[in-house]
Image (cartoon, rainbow, N blue to C red; front, top):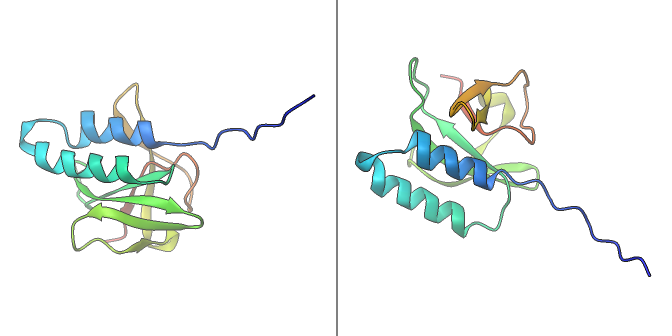
Length: 123
């Protein structure tokens, strides 16, 4: 008797949580915001998430957290000025999080992929 089990869906939940806790929202000054964002992440039933950064020149500042719901990237939490839905045409840069180097690296793509961890919107 052979039983088929579907392969597990890819999830970037742990990677995004580590990026938020240890890189983007690290430190005591951001403890309250970090706690709110992590609670939203932990409370979501989705498996894939994308961080929206403020469009700054030198550092990446957290603006919002989005979840992949079917073919849409929907706001989970963040600043009131964040758009409710992200569209690939509005994104200037797609990035992936390198957990070893604890930094975000540019992706050479023009759409959301399974490895997309963060985005910057056009100014």
